[in-house]
Length: 290
Image (cartoon, rainbow, N blue to C red; front, side, top):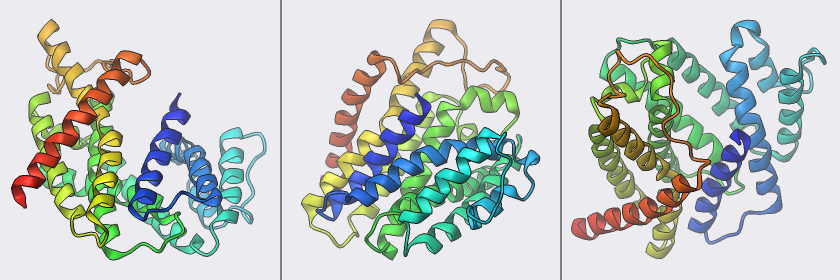
């Protein structure tokens, strides 16, 4: 299920950029996205256990062919071979990919070392860097060169995507003592309002892209669908609080619980409803601005 979620998200994100450029994803681009959807969760798992592999992850990223791994370590072996396959498809943007992923690793390290209590400024900075670089990394594997305007849009979108991930991981991160962007809020309503404001800022940034208005609108609609699970999540948190009286955003709550399961059809249906509603909300906002 986890790999399927990565696959769906990456293909939806890649398709959004393809719609913007009025092109279909090529066979090579689809292959890259599929391989990255396998590599990404492996990278996360390896990074969580990176104290076992001090310099190995970095060596694998820089030169997977020249870096030997223990064949009995299935996680490392699989990560190495997926990277080799991915890098074969990445010529010429291979070097750009390496540079961004190395920056992302540094951001991951900052994120992992950021423990509660932490300042809002530090939390936002780490969230922007980690999420932004991840979004830019995915965009960089598509064939068309990444423009400065697209980089800004991707970086801003990455912050929203990372915020969504942090909200889904709210209770488990609290137990681990981590300071994530979910710590910025006292309740689900605050988180929802903040997310919508940031999404409006991102939408305004999209209008600066040098593409036809219709294409930008379709691009935004794809991204709304990608981001809408956060509203399903916050609805579930709110319902849980109303039923139990327990505010999950209270850091004294130290019980990792799964409140929102996106594998359930009820959650998926709610996702489509909220994606449509959110798309209209942002569209109405854009109409007011212009």
